[in-house]
Picture 1 (cartoon, rainbow, N blue to C red):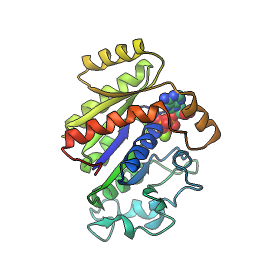
Picture 2: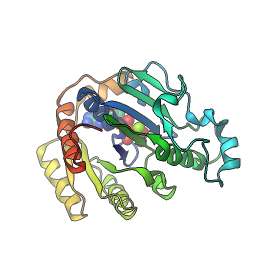
Picture 3: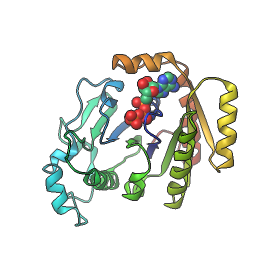
Length: 259
Ligand SMILES: Nc1ncnc2c1ncn2[C@@H]1O[C@H](COP(=O)(O)OP(=O)(O)OP(=O)(O)O)[C@@H](O)[C@H]1O
Ligand SMILES: [Mg+2]
């Protein structure tokens, strides 16, 4: 099962990815987290890794090299990429939690992120997902990844929505593009919600836009402080909310475990 977590910048994608990954791991699943955000690099710390993985982009000779072969359909030599074939350093493991990163823009004037989009798409298409495994993608902010076809092999899209109005506008765009690309399982998870009244208000607004809300994570001091400290957030109320989200996704995909 592949779940892509999308949203406006700063709304909580990496946080929701971390909560989902912890939940899947607690259920006994092997979890591969794919960091597909070319700008931000804090995810590895939230997940408890000491350093980031070497980007997969380096495995194929870097961005310049990929640019040269971008027009060709087959970027990786093999049709399938079993997770365990990814070399150490590029694939980080912590028990059943694994992390890869597509690539990061590190320098000014480096050029656009298109090659990373191509690599994300190809990697997600080719990575082998076995029974008992779940792949969770921390997508770049906004909607450009849909234009690059990154979602072609994704079966579930979760849109993170926080209170500001623009978050809802981006959610509506993501929902349209995701549904338009044939992904039926496109839902929203509310995040940074201060109270029940706000929850109901956002649910109603999203309902008007044809978007179903399947979970709500409230404003949470521990989550915020963990990001200030650059550490793993302690399990709390948010983890319970995410249980419901995972149950919903599993029920919809007709599977009994997070795989
Ligand atoms: N439920 C929450 N309660 C309090 N703070 C939160 C919550 N969710 C996220 N945050 C905080 O909001 C900030 C942004 O969260 P996060 O990094 O998960 O967002 P993002 O969408 O991945 O951002 P980016 O687009 O920059 O990658 C962080 O400081 C995080 O701790
Ligand atoms: Mg992030």
